[in-house]
Every structure is written in C-alpha cells, then in structure tokens.
Amino acid sequence: MSLPPASLANSVQQRAIRVLPDDVASKIAAGEVVERPASVVRELLDNAIDAGSRRVNIEIRGGGRELIRVIDDGSGIPAVDMPNAFLRHATSKISKADDLWAITTLGFRGEALFSIAAVSRTTLASRPKQSPAGHEITLEGGKFVSQAARGIPAGTVATVRDLFYNLPARLKFLKSAPAESAYIAGLVQQYALAHPSIRFMLTSEGRPTFQSPGNGELREATACVYGAEVSRSLLPVGLEPSDDQEVTAASPDGITVYGYASPPAVSRSNRSAMHFFINSRAVQSRMLQYAVEEAYHSLLMVGRHPISIINVTVDPSMLDVNVHPAKAEVKFRDDRATFSAVQRAVRSSLTAHVPAPVYGSRSNEGWALPSGDGEPTAPPAIDWDATANVPPQSSQSGLWSEGSRPLPDAGIEALPPPPPRNLPPLRVIGQVGTTYIIAEGPEGLFLVDQHAA
Ligand code: ADP
Ligand code: MG
Image (cartoon, rainbow, N blue to C red; front, side, top):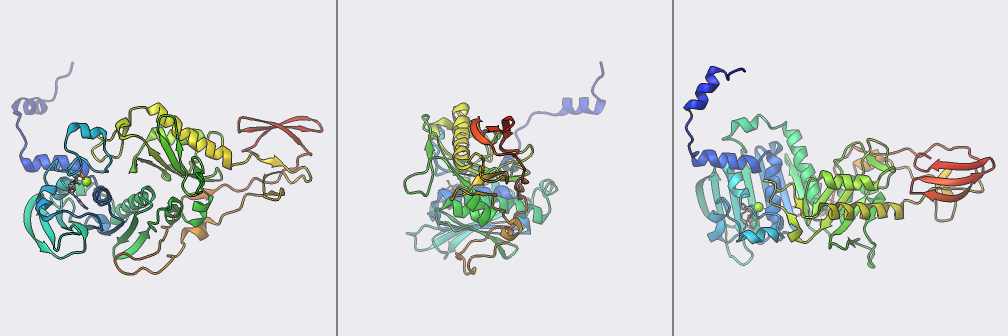
C-alpha cells in the first residue's frame, strides 16, 4: 500500500476548517452563475424579459469582457429598491419555498445581479414609467461605489464593465473576443427565437450585428436567424389552428408542443440548430434532442441533424427549474410524457408534410415529390450561399431601429436531389412504416427504401 506524499499528508493535517471571508464566498458563488460574458448577457436578458420589455438592446465590446450593456423598456426598478437588487438571494419574483413549484419568470434565485456585480464594475440605472426621475447605482467587485438620480427613459440600463477584472484566473479560461462575441450572438438569437414578440438588437464593437422583428411571428424570428429560405422551408410542428398562424398541440398530460422543424432535405452536421424552450426558457436537453431525432428516424442520414425550434409548455408544478445554477437545465416530473409529446408532435408534422414519394406512371424519370398539378418535380434546390448574407431589410436608425437581419450561417446544407433512376413502370401497392414502398413491376415485387430513393 502506498502512502500519500509527505507534503500532502502534512497539508491535510495542518489545515483547520474555517468559514471563508465574504469576498471569497461571493466569488465562489459568482463562479457558478457567471462563467463567461455570455452568462452575464443571459442573466440581463432574463431580467429584461421578466420586466415585461418589448424592446431589448444589447451592446458589447471586447467580446463582452470590456463592456456589456443591456437596455430595456420594461417595468423599471423603484429607486428605494435599487440597492436591494444587488443583495444575494434578493428577488421580487418569489417569496416562499412553495413558489419554486410555480415559477413563471425566468429569474427567481435573486443571485444574478449579486454575482455579476461581484466580478465586474456594474452600473444599474432604472426608471419605472410612473417615476419622474431615474436612479443609478454603481458597484465594483461587489462593493458599493455610488448612487445618484439620473434622467433616463423608462426602463432599465445595466452596464457591466471589466468582467473578471478581480478574478484573473477566470480570464485565462475565456476565448478570444470574436469567439466570446459569437457565443453572445448565438445566445441573443436563441432569445429571439424563444420570444418572437420582443425585438432584440445586438451591437458588437459598435456595429449592429443582429436584429429580430419582434412582431410575434416565430417564423419571422427564425428567418432572422437562419435566413428567409430556410425559414420558409420549415414545417410547422403541432396542429394547424384555425387562424393558420401559430400551431399548437396539447397532449392529454397538458403538455403543449409547438414550433418548427426542418424537412429531411434540410439538415446540419451538428445539433446547434436544435432549440428547446420550456415555458419560454431556453434549456439544454439531451432527452428532447433524442425525442426529435427519434421522430426523424430513418429520414436523416447518420451524422445529420435537423433544425428544430420546439416550445414546450407545461404546468410549472410539473417542472423543477432549480436544478442548475444558470437555469440552463430543467427536470421534468414526467420525463416520459414530455419525451413522447415532443416526439409525437414532430413525427406527425413530418408524416403530414413530407409526402411519400410516388412513381410517375407516365414516365420513367424516377421517384419525385408530387407537385400540385400531379407532375413529378424534383425538390427545389436552395442556394444557401445566397440566403446566408441577406442585407438588412431596412436602415438601422436610433436606439430602437426597424428591420431585421440574419447572421451569416454556414452550417446549413441541403442534401442534393437524388439522381434520376431508370426503373420499369411500377404500381405502388403499399407502404411499410414511413420507410419502404412496396410496388409491383413486370418482373415481380419491388421493395424501395423511399429515403434512399
Ligand atoms: P432574479 O431575477 O432572480 O430575481 P436578479 O439578481 O437578476 O434576481 O435581480 C434582482 C431583482 O432586481 C429582480 O427580482 C427584479 O426585481 C430587479 N431587476 C433586475 N433587473 C431588472 C430589470 N431589467 N427590470 C426591472 N427589474 C429588474
Ligand atoms: Mg435575474
């Protein structure tokens, strides 16, 4: 048996247990919430959304390390409450333990402003609509610096400078400014998809880089992120409602699923375009990814992944949102019901919208999707390069400018249309699952893998 090295044995013996000083404890706590600049943006966006904002502007410099500013037009914070907003576990969103099972806001832990202020120089300026003047408070490394009256439009401006200036070890884990900016851009896009009725605008290093229309249309928010062509190609997930706009599907368990998913011809080589929003909260969920990919079973080639924007609405009591410090994961009381609600909704959308290929009886051009007039047509080819850099739809002006603009996206690819095949005239006599066509030809039965075809 080997003994621990003498130095380790000594250090274990000599160390006494002690309660850490406040500034160490707060840096440890902040470390859980604020991993990188994008974590700050996430928390500030959550606060803006919880405040009922319709417009949210985000400005970053140095990949968010030098500056993150989030401006919203939400409810604002009364001057007397401003210092409290920075206390640990200080929140206006819950008041008792039972409330954890009825969370309808994105924030509830009361830790974000405390954590952000602990590892940066933070200024919060805010004015509720009914207050004649605004109020501003500044903290550095979690310590109060100053506060004063300040004239600002109704809403809140959170400014975070010099992130991790007092935590140099964390700085070493950050990536380059462009890489951190890309994380933030991806995050803002995700919020635009989760909240289509809020107009988000991102300015990076002084240049506007993303803007969503905020008109309530999920497909239009999707167009800003993935381009108009891809957005048009997406299939609605859920039941078509009578107004033909939003699609929803409620399962017997009260789980509602709605959103969009790509047709099998539009796919990606990674899962970064698979978005899941549980009660409007963006979450990472292997289980839901799996549910969607199961729905595509046999429709996508190995290594290909769909684009999916899936909103799941469940009763808050069926959900534990308090399982992750950054609230990026949730725990369902009934995993299986959620899994199958999502899988069913996506699968039925695919079966309804992706018609089984039929063989043109008058020609031998091969398998093709039927067009409206009954003539076989090849799937439309999409010029992804042309859609990747669509110019802004209108000029940017002022703080709350109009228009929308997708970021370039290089990862989306359409599979090429299948090559023409010379088959004898066939009579389709059935389909097995949604995978094989059984057809009768001059020399006997044909079993055709429709996706391979
Ligand atoms: P939480 O969001 O979990 O409550 P935070 O530390 O993020 O905790 O914020 C503390 C409180 O400050 C919030 O509960 C809210 O009352 C107030 N607050 C923070 N940001 C905003 C904002 N942008 N608009 C209005 N109120 C805000
Ligand atoms: Mg918050």
